[in-house]
Image (tube, rainbow, N blue to C red; front, side, top):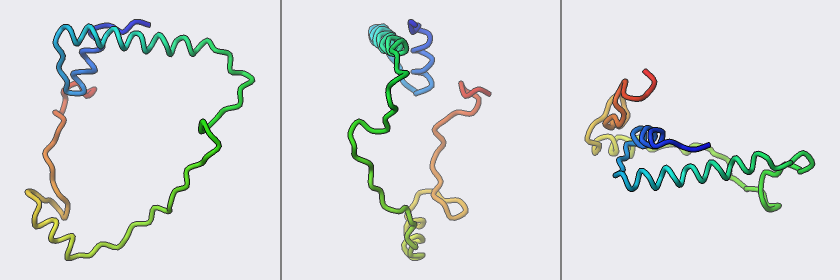
Length: 104
């Protein structure tokens, strides 16, 4: 399945990237090669292959995700030093434009 220049331009626009013609051609070719590799993998017979979660026999050992109590003075100091706050949270500028290539 070949990737078109238009598809690469569309994804680049969504990611807020811009490419010159040479880069656009290069990325179009590279992405087409990558999808071709995935298409080759689709025809491999894996009926008798046991699914694997990890390449090795190791499992991740994770600690419990327990929130630590926050010191109210530290929280207030953080909010006092933030450029803009709203309802006890740090307010940051929007990075997406409403209605522009977001399906609306």
